[in-house]
Length: 403
Image (tube, rainbow, N blue to C red; front, side, top):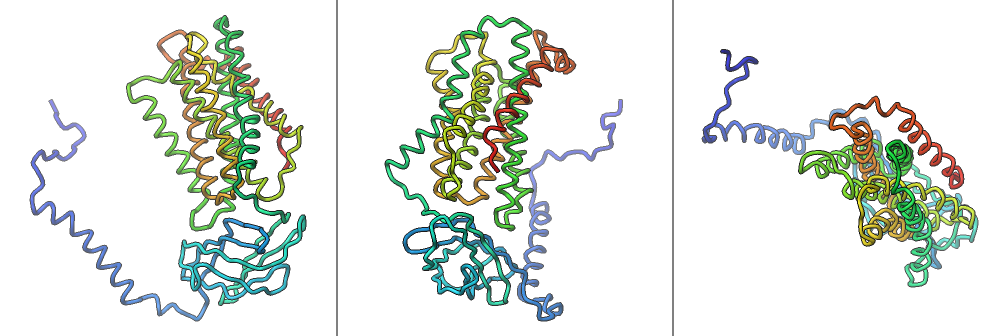
């Protein structure tokens, strides 16, 4: 009998000796030597034709107060860069930089400009480096940047609870009415959960990509979003199946709440950022639109636990887990969090939502059998549920899309 059919080399079971360790260290020595030669010998000087270094400057935060403008910038140039001049609305202004001097690749600095901005007006800030390169930043609507205060945080928390916690709780209140659901109704509800989560996944990835485009080039926005979403998905799959098998019942409802909560956190960041940018003309209709848009999320959380009897504390926990992050998101968003952090949070949420889609789809495919048959997703109850979830989320999203 052939004991090594694939002709793999035999695996040594002995501990590595000095000779093995030498072959492990040798590549590292070669790499260090190559790096030192590149830094000390400067072999690239032969390619220097006098062209200025490639420069990139991204504005991550903008603060408007009684002292003028303050902007946090991040350098993404190939060499340390220097801000030589600053223009506001095509006029040169004196500025103060902290820390002063050159800005190294990947580092940030605050630039303060004593410019008398006008409430409600648009302003354009232009940074001019010592090489003559220019970088523009638009302030669409000039409004004072919100400051942390007890009353302000309380108002934002109330809004976050209204658009996040309340609709999820309303959806969970449907639990008693759905308890007597038959097999087809149960399949419909679980498939509807897949549909609404699929919409949230696409929506979250689009929003993450939009924030990634606004982030500094050094973060490689699109790649960052994809890698973060994949890492989030794999980590949650590993956690959910660490004991073998797929999560069901209360565990699955918890994972659904986590995924929805991360999406609502990103939604809260967007609302808070709108406040910070002066573009938060939310109004009663828009707030009601957010609430209606999120009600189905509570029904989706309730679907996996219809055949068990959770305690009241479980329902409260699920509502807070899914809706509470909206409050935290509004708080952080109103403080103008850098766009790359928002993109990362949304990407984590997208990975969590994708993990839940896989788990709920597996439950629908299994039905009441141990074996999975994904053709069950095409039966009328499952297909109708997916279509209903997508349609409801799409229609209600029209109420909250303003840009």
